[in-house]
Amino acid sequence: MKLHFHKVPVPLQDSFSIRHDRAPNFGRPLHYHPELELHFTIKGTGIRLIGDDVSHFKEGEVILLGENLPHAWRGKENGTGDAPEDSWVEAIVIQFSADCLGADFFQLPEAYLLPRIFELAKKGLLFYGELAEQIKALMYRSVKAARFERILILLQILQVISEREEFSTIASAHAFYKPNEHESVRLNNVLVFTLANFKREITLDEVAAVSNLSVTSFCRYFKMITNKTYLDFLTEVRISHTRRMIIEDRYPIAMICYECGFNNVSNFYRHFKRFTGMTPFEYKKRYNKELSA
Image 1 (cartoon, rainbow, N blue to C red):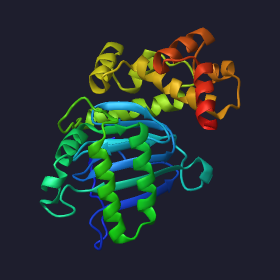
Image 2 (cartoon, rainbow, N blue to C red; image 1 turned 30 degrees about the vertical axis):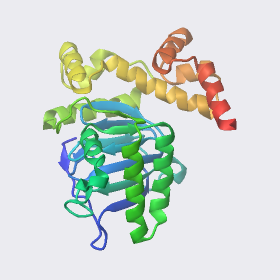
Image 3 (cartoon, rainbow, N blue to C red; image 1 turned 90 degrees about the vertical axis):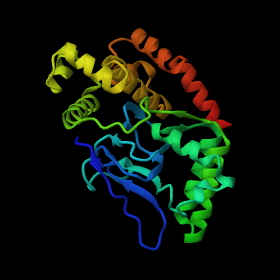
Image 4 (spheres, helix red, strand yellow; image 1 turned 120 degrees about the horizontal axis):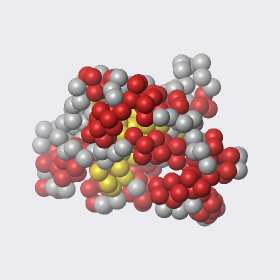
């Protein structure tokens, strides 16, 4: 997975790009571009790479990426367009340059809060709470909006982002993070292997062999690139899948535990509480309560 420069296609009659994507998978390899990107995942789960961060993503995430910040979303591979549409991923993506409305527009006194947001976005911003809900509603509106209305909606989005603090940064490196080609290929191989095999036991010997490193070198490499151990990363992937299956409520929790790669129930409960702060039953109860509210 070599790092690619991506030229964002913007129609000649437009100042920025708004897309509503539905496809078998997100498809694009690790890439970067000078435009900022607002990404709303409507449907799909998997692994996302943003700068030096590797994390699991889920439906409903809203993320702002800054200029030249490398990123990629890797969902469950559904092959080609022959895959059933109910398994496709879906997202709304708005891409805009910092001068899309004029070289000095975002430097106006009235927009004094925006340069700070654009600077923070170089780490990637994950929105949550009421702010995330406001952004989602505006992004839905933007897809069907007429051309001038799109400008107004973009300004509304930037206004709410600049006036609220319901976000967290994603990447730990504030500058342009550019892994070399060998690092990118290794990381891609590890991610593909993990997503394909997380339901069974994975040994460090196996995953180190996938990356063509010794176990010691692999553990050091993975921690340096992702800022977490491989075992913690593997557990995060498994917990994320158990959360989805708990919400779907088609199987008993004990069965979900083994289906997602945990070798015993008590081990599963311990890890689930460590990563979510609650037991599987508490998680299910809270979700049902929010759903009925």
